[in-house]
Image (cartoon, rainbow, N blue to C red; front, side, top):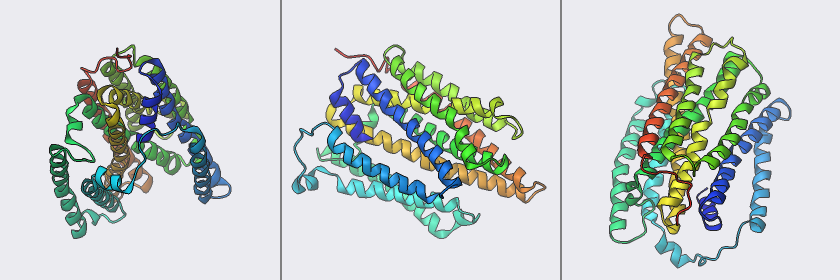
Length: 369
């Protein structure tokens, strides 16, 4: 994705063409999501789930080969071993990789079946280590930047309020999106007892609306201020976790699940387009790919951390309910509903942060003179 941002900004001038290019780029996400859902459901019900991975392997091979023929020629200086040694912040890379790896392990561990896993000495020690490494990383990249040396994520990147706010808002939005998609799947299969294929089909409204939202965002970014677009999209998306939290499993699909599916993708799709245009408008050409990489990393972290945190919440609530007078299905549903209320809080926080942080950004899709 970082390279894609650089390719688009290099080959499309500012204005309508670039806006549509980013909208098309964002529209590819839901198309792939739809294909994965449908084929996943088909594979599970027919030849088996392993074929989803074989299909992914074949698809990546096709993309890998086609890239040689479709991507524009690289006119920049070729990388060399000497340049690789001097142009990459290897210490910063090691620090931030260690932080993310440790956090990923701890979050995966505490969402395991053992309720005592958060209290394990190893998890506590690793969590403390990760927390200590964060200021170490910030100090290191600050030192590198002060000395004019390569910094993997320069601290100055976060001084751009529009970029910082859209990153935080996107983190929360993707945390909500991934958690809603995951627990909606569990709700359908574990509580409503519908098949994987039928579950996949019930996600189709999300995909259709996501494609539509990307192109609407591409059309509006040069006509409406970014903070107003972000406010409208995030407020509408907040309706999805609210519907999920209130729905009854006996309600028909069209009464609740359908409108919720239509609302889920709006904030992520609009923020994706806004963020990429904020990046191209705020940073120089040489820093745009870096900012795009940071933005992509933040969104991926939102997906993984959001899912881990909500899984821990659901497991805790379900465990307390199962020890009371609830049966397993009732306890699971109570855990899911708690997750949906948590997602509502994340959606409203994303709305407030993006609306306030982008108040000075104006119409990010306008062509600058």
